Image (cartoon, rainbow, N blue to C red; front, side, top):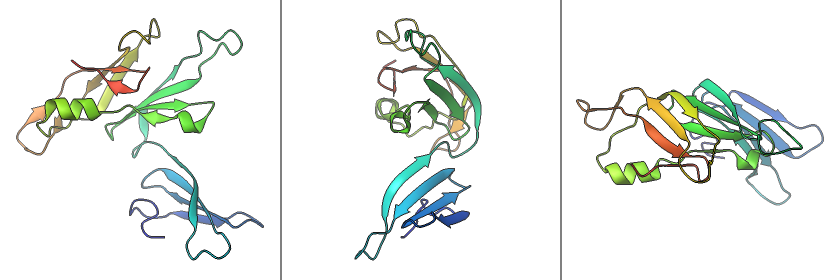
Length: 166
């Protein structure tokens, strides 16, 4: 295993009793990885991985579930952190958790500027599939050109987890 936590320090290691599974964790990248050791293989294979923000989230809000008569509660958390990511975390299925994509923003701007860290966000669940329904406010970030500052609000869509075309 080379750089199992993206080169960050591994802070915890433990084998699961009577299983060929090693669990590694890193406080630096906020992740837990399960490795499976199979017969005849020299290296373990990745079994499961859970990760979150690179830094602790500073704003967390429940989201979704209002249209579900059985559950009548939030199914997701929307979180932001100083690592610059806006994240949708599923409370029902970890495989559905994901970051909101900045790909359209980066290709549209094409100036190499960073959007900075997300300070605040607000959302509305009304007609969420029809238009962008999350608004974020960012601190001033510095891009490749150290003298350039870029900070403005962005609109995001929870339907496809992407930034809006503004």
